[in-house]
Length: 198
Image 1 (cartoon, rainbow, N blue to C red):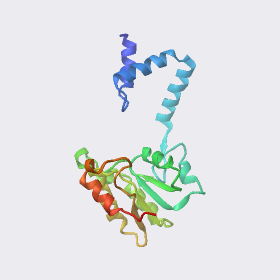
Image 2 (cartoon, helix red, strand yellow):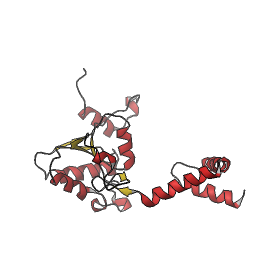
Image 3 (cartoon, rainbow, N blue to C red):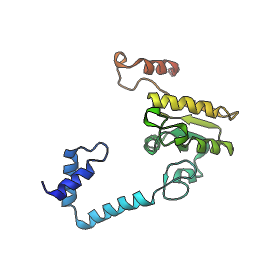
Image 4 (cartoon, rainbow, N blue to C red):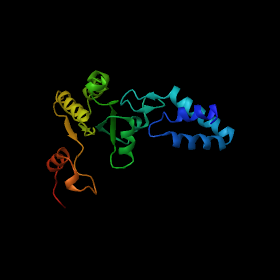
């Protein structure tokens, strides 16, 4: 294999979810592309990496000081959905079911990985709430051990704001899951979050 091809495959395979076989297919596809298209692609990636910012209010990715969601006056500014990563914002937005604002923590508390509460954007969230106007905070954190630790920590921090409604997204059994293969913690959440059948 050509040294140049090996280098490109090596770099592409560093991307999450991209193995060497997929990286090779991508490299060969890039080789078939028009040189102008490859230039546009690499320029876009370079600009994205060097010019992207974090929203001063919610820590989402943005081209400006405020991201488009925070700047949108049509959204419900009294509700904030707290998520771990930017990808979680995209997942929720794709449902078209939520019209409030977001707050991106930038991860979860994980002592094993050396991530402490001070490494996350929790103080920024508290500052937003302290400024007033926020009535509800929805905690949309993963159900991992680290996620549960972060959820517990956030709930304790947010209790300092009297009158603030603190909710969590429903957790439970996924559509199509068989009960015998579901773990106890998931079943516990499903039982706690049960609702009337309409």
